[in-house]
Image 1 (tube, rainbow, N blue to C red):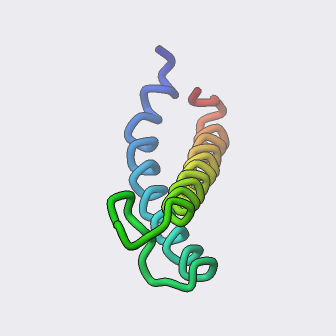
Image 2: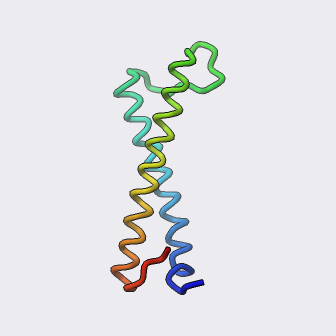
Length: 88
């Protein structure tokens, strides 16, 4: 295993936690803007429609994936700038 990849492991774990927090905040704000509601529906909330639950889940997944990819990519780019080696 390359040294840069090993050195990136703790950075990647930290960035993963940060990206989760950022994605959660982004989803909450997006849901408020789109759904006009403070809380996104849970799958087991019987007062919400199937459509509402599935749209919320798809939106949440898309936001989490995009934020994670952006944070991971920027972390890897920063490591390459600092070390000259791509960590992947």
